[in-house]
Length: 435
Ligand code: GDP
Image 1 (cartoon, rainbow, N blue to C red):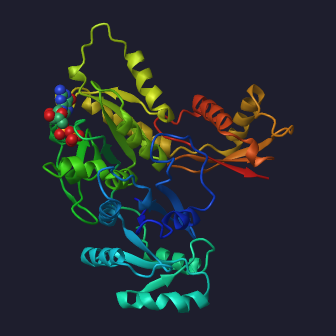
Image 2 (tube, rainbow, N blue to C red):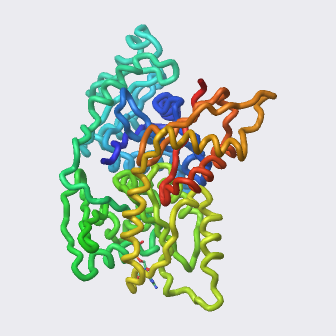
Image 3 (spheres, helix red, strand yellow):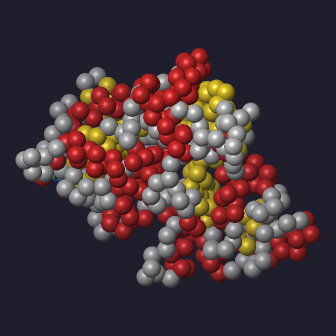
């Protein structure tokens, strides 16, 4: 089940990223840095009273140089509005309502979205009285908060969590859900067509939850697979290029909606920056991944070393060395069906649980190979590791000094862990706790 997406929308300087940071809080996994998206902290996992969701700070979207800021904000807001499950429209008490706010409100009304109207920078009930009055003319329910000091923040979160869509108990059929992602023209629609068109594969639209999302079912032997958002992938025409470029939200949503994501790369062009960003989204969403080098038919295979090519891909997608690489030709259907056994395997790996006893045996062996470096002259002990979650497999490392467990050591640990337990195709998460 996809986690709901909550987008914070509003003009520059209203406090979007302050609110974002407060919502995200501190309990984030230690993960590798990767291109583009994480560094700006565009979106993070969050939860309120055990209800998980994804929070997006639309203020982090990059402005196009040729466009003025107002238009840019509006466009980003529009995309966010279209793709989000809930929108937090943030306004600024200090400036009062401005025309841009009114414009956003009018847009939101048209969309019939779930919206929470928030007036930020209100620190006390006194300020509430002073500032909120001006906003009443907008004719919407308002929640005053201070993103900075937390005034009435809990109320905002209660409201938000009451609006989050209920996670249904279990979907009637739990076929593996597959997202196909990649930049324009890598061959996504072609792959969809070749997956759906093959022999006895059936196309059966499953009504989407919102908008025009249509999923398709395809079959391989007796197994069925759902291809997420087939309509979005196949949609072509004048909008395709520009919208796809900005529609990181749509990609994110499709990834979130999947069990395994297929990342398409154009073999002839190799991994470019946008591929890195897309792969970064998949990694961060914690989903299983297969890297598909498409258009393999265009490659001159003389004197070619597959190993070298794979190494090239992994060097550019260094945070995703766990993902298997498959060379395919979507157009000729070459090796396309090989995707399915990989998907099955990855789903199995994503759901694997290692018990604490096994993990401790593993930890003992690992520590005997290498211990964490001294931290300020002190030995950093690791007491034990437990797996707290699957999909993605997530581990808590209990240590004597939290700051003493650094990224290089976690990477070492991860490497050792994969050697012993595999976890092929899935990212791992590590949390560090001090005991
Ligand atoms: P999308 O934008 O990712 O959906 O890409 P399309 O599926 O529309 O493909 C873009 C172009 O690449 C089209 O002209 C396809 O015919 C072509 N294409 C897709 N897959 C392959 C392939 O495996 N080999 C070759 N040679 N061309 C391909």
